[in-house]
Length: 319
Image (cartoon, rainbow, N blue to C red; front, side, top):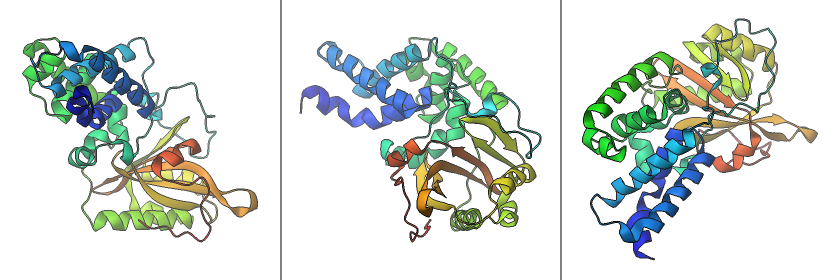
């Protein structure tokens, strides 16, 4: 192991999480981390220890991310593009793959200790909320409110002043409060309530039991389905939409974790009745039930989350 690797490699996963929050995509975060380490490796001989290696790497990563954000359309969830659909029985917008959607991240890509300690800061809805902010405000809010850097440290990373960082943080917090998707900052119930909710949800969804889903959805529950731009808000609206789709039992849910949240791989019967990968569901649990269902329709995501493309018919759902 080289001197650079010995000094820098330990920070790779936390830098990935930082870049993911900044850019809203694990693929973009991978690219940003690779560029960060390439720049750092090239400059390591000139690094004179005026700051810690960690701070130095964050400074480089911040610059890389800010440059990546420039001139690029921000990533979003459907709720960031317009209001909820008024009629669950109405026409659903077709998939729009031209929109750069916020993408989920798997547990294996995150530092387990950091994800457990600051899991609210990695939720899909929170990452989507960050994308509403200008690049520098985004960096300030993540550095100060998620990673707990001091104001003077954040100022140093951004080549700014402490006063400017504090001002940017206040603007970022106000903007976040106005534009953040519902459920980005909810406090999850503790076990065993959490496990009971997940068990009930999985059984109800697989059995197409809409009445049970109504009982466990929060009153202001949200359903989003990227890359489908249509989304719904409210327990009755969400249930009415699902009632049109879940007309009979037979779908399968296999548990996983995404963005530090409970998640399921949704399988729908295909050729020969074999359940095939269909969508990844991320659930946000609140004090009054399931507050969000983010259903990402991209079967290519499944291997990243430890999920097979085909589910065994005999396989049991287990939370």
